[in-house]
Amino acid sequence: MDINKEAQAHYGLGLDFASVENHEEAIPEYDKAIKLEPKFAEAYFRRGTSKYYLNQYSDAIADLNNSIGFGLETDKQKAHAYFRRARAYYILQKHTEAIEDYNKALKLEPLITGLYRHRGNALSALGKHEEAKQDYKRALDEYAGDAERSPEWHKPYRDAGLVLIALKNYGRAEEYLGKAEKLEKDFLKEQSMEQNKIEAVKYYNLGNGCYNFGRYPNAIKAYNKAIGIDPEFARAYNKRGCSYSKLGKRDEAVEDFKKAIKCNPMYAQAYYNLGDELAYSIKYREAILKYNKAIGIDPKHAGAYSSRGYAKNFLKQYNEAIRDLNKAIELDPKSAGAYCIRGDVLAESGKTKEAIRDFNKAIGLGPESAGAYCRRGDALAESGKPKGAIMDFNKAIALDPEYAGAYLGRGFALAVLGKYADAIKDFEKIIELGEDPLVSLAYISLGNARLSLGKQSEAILDFERATGEYAKHIENNPDSPGAHHGMALALNALGKHEEAEVYLGKAKKLENGGCSV
Image 1: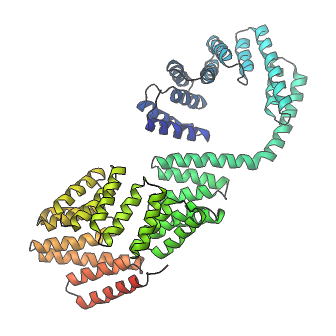
Image 2 (image 1 turned 90 degrees about the horizontal axis):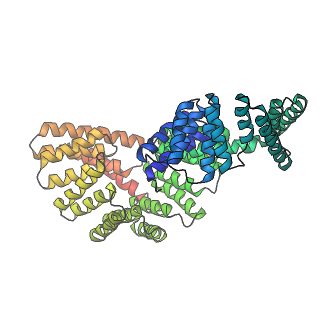
Image 3 (image 1 turned 120 degrees about the horizontal axis):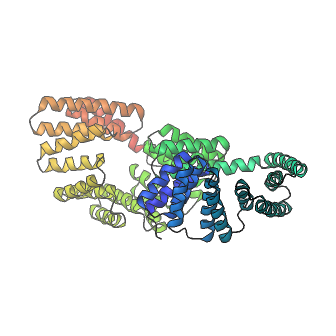
């Protein structure tokens, strides 16, 4: 049976929760998988198992019925479903039904550990003591074989001791249980470090499952557990950093990427992620150093070449940026993102037609990419085609209704067409969304649109708000040429030309200082 991918993903996340014995959160994931695929036999089996561990035995039986009825794929799976259902029946004192299921399981998979012992318990409960004794003896032979194969493993001795108690052979039972206790202590002492690593990986996998569903706070909790168990777990620090980044907690993300690198100095992905955080903070020169490191460790890291090209574009190193993006596309010809960034660089360097070709390619590779439509819209607007641009911005907004950049581009295009009232709505939407640093530019654009409608007093208030926003940006990022440029624009709009010249000079100085890395 072909299973819906989303159902598979929820099922997988349920398994991750169950692996760390968090059955309460596993069950809702199985619920979602079953809602998407009502005949998903494995999901019913796993949900039934989780309900069993939560002492919900009747509900567990109902799910196990469905798992068997909808056709588990292998005899081994079916046998385990019968075995688990038998255990639930036994606890509910339905001993006859339990024995029937043990028999079915035994027929399909005779090697299920503990099956004879548990069937013996059910037979004994029905007063069938001779049959029970035969099962206990078979179980004892099974455990003896296990003990012979793994003489340092405590569990066969413990289970054999329990069987001997059922057989009323208390002397031997005490001997076996004492041996089990000693072996278990030795085993736990020797295996604690390895077991800790296994537990850490389970929580790491759970974090990844939550991350893939966009449940970043839950992912962070799971990564916290993994790191608590294994403080040198580089991958857990890296993915926790990615989760913080998604939540906009940039400082925490940077610290986690640095910790990942400290744990593993050859971790290319952590250097790459750290570079992206620095680039987001407009620290392009520092970002490029991290991308250099990632590429030095992994020369085939397409994302690092792509991001380095992105950073070089902002430093106006267009030729070097193009070389990096060409390399990224060579390594990953299906990277819509690399085509988008190369299109940005071409547009910045005045090659608008070539830029549009790259955006077309990006849209072909990723037709659901709002960013690609927005970028092509910007290029069309730059080419003097505002109506075509508006169509692309409309598409970008349809794909992502909170895409501030698309509202900004559409507002500009509408203003070019003289539709100032509509443009104002778009600029106000950006302010409502509150996405920095576009809010500052939105205030300037809003002021310009109001001036065109003769609303001078309202326009002045907008320009003043813009200066306030840019002041905050400059305080947070004093080396940002863009923030200084923006401040100069806002001050010029207010007629404060001398102050504007100071900021413009600072912007040029910052740009010139970023020509080499």
